[in-house]
Image (cartoon, rainbow, N blue to C red; front, side, top):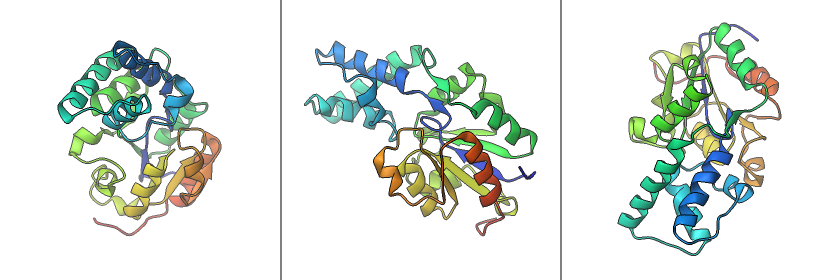
Length: 229
């Protein structure tokens, strides 16, 4: 791996951490409270990636429930009450992530997390897994008031003069790929997350089947690129 002072922008859920078990537990608890059949882990995996409000909306919709805005907001808050109690009960980093992040940090890369998970939840999960200290920034949709696939979510994570060191985005979903492409940033799509079949048609710069693949792709893609100073 080449040394560098560039930035690697990581998605969180499905990219660094398999958080689906705890998200599924919180969503199923919410459904159970409403007298609805739980969805289960495998189903919930396919709903992750667009933020909490969308996860709750989709989960309820699967069970035939569509709420007015005020009721939807209350459902989201109830979901968060369940989820924040157990951010890391069953969530774990994917194989190679802990070692790979350590190698990137030692090589001088600036690492950030850009996620559609709320910032407090993202920070709490990373702290529970002893990963938080490795990141210069954790940005949720509430951090800058913008969310992927809006490219501004990625671009707001970059420091002044970022083009001098290069930037690579790493994510597991079409949302991540679209955001990176709209920001004109190279993107690595990991196949172990929640992206599903749609990810294969998203045309990232590189696909990765292991975290070693991610490290190799960062080296290949992080040549200085044009962009705002």
